[in-house]
Image 1 (cartoon, rainbow, N blue to C red):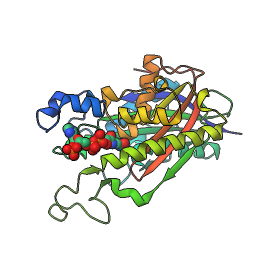
Image 2: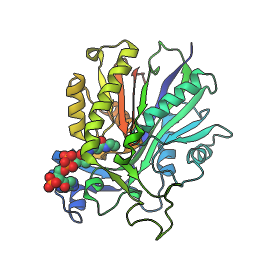
Image 3: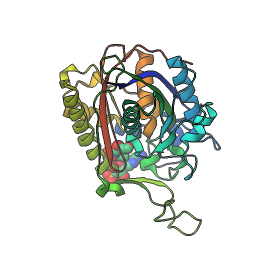
Amino acid sequence: MRAAVVSGLGSWLPPRVVTNDELTARLDTTDEWIRSRIGVVTRHVVEPGTATSDLSVEAARRALRSAGVPGAGGVILATTTPDRPCPATAPEIASRLGLIDVPAFDIAAVCTGFVYGLGVGAGLITAGIVDSLLVVGGDAYSTILDPQDRTTSVIFGDGAGAVVLRAGSPDEPGALGPFDLGSDGARSDLITVRAGGSRQRSSPGAVPPGDEFFRMEGREVFANAVARMAAAARTALKRQGWAESDVDGVIAHQANVRILDAVSAELGVPRDKFVSNISDVGNTSAASIPLALAHGVRTGELRAGQKVLLTAFGGGLTWGATTLVWPELSLAD
Ligand code: UT7
């Protein structure tokens, strides 16, 4: 029986750091509000002209070096901020990595995208369609935020993270466990960019002002994020045959530090087992989970042999969770 095994990990953040003070200079907000209500102190933001593919290629290169391999048999990019509406961004990433003629496509599941990408990648590997894959979570959210919207501008940051998946066996460290993936399209209005698709094109003057920007109903999203991440985590753990008390480390989507507190309480897994880098990078959407994985490896919170739970929630609405025993791997510069 084949399994998809995590064999490399890489991350990349654009160099420009935006502090809370920089945001308070132009928005009606305070450093204290942002720190206490969200847990963000700084976030990284792309310079004009830098796109999601640029971040993703850097992260993917590091993942390949971490795996000690020259290439992979395909690329899946999870993103909400593709370089352009058409074509997908993943083929360009593959080409820039020198991966010739490999399958490459994007996944749109907002902040759950990376976990969806792992699930789809695991399916391609276990079905024998490919022998290895790069799964990248990359987002340049700053390019879709309304700079005047204090409810979103303070939360999000840009970045990319990637893993290499290779074919292996289910009982080796790094093998992805069972998944729980879900969606609720009846609440698609809670997290949305209204214009730019087939329902509402984004030609100048043709759409109501502001509809080209990302919008979020924060309070309702908060409640859904806690309930869905905890429920997906419980289901994935059950399918894996692990109890909550077996879990050594949790990598949950870094949406809000209070969401992490609430998921910990709801799941009954102690908060100190939750790896968190939201204070440094904010909510990086599809990049959130792989960036937190890299942070956990760097700080030593994630160590080989630990039982690890991944859980995410995002627009769609979408949610997903899976498990793995953390493999022996090191990060590449
Ligand atoms: O990644 C995808 C999933 N995303 C998430 O999971 C994010 C989920 N939601 C959240 O993280 C939180 O709901 C927010 C951070 C967006 C908002 O925090 P909250 O504690 O839910 O605040 P709220 O929306 O209930 O607003 C409380 C107050 C409001 O003022 P009033 O109506 O009580 O007078 C807001 O207008 O805080 C106000 N507010 C702000 N004040 C200062 C909203 N944004 C800000 C701000 N600075 N930046």
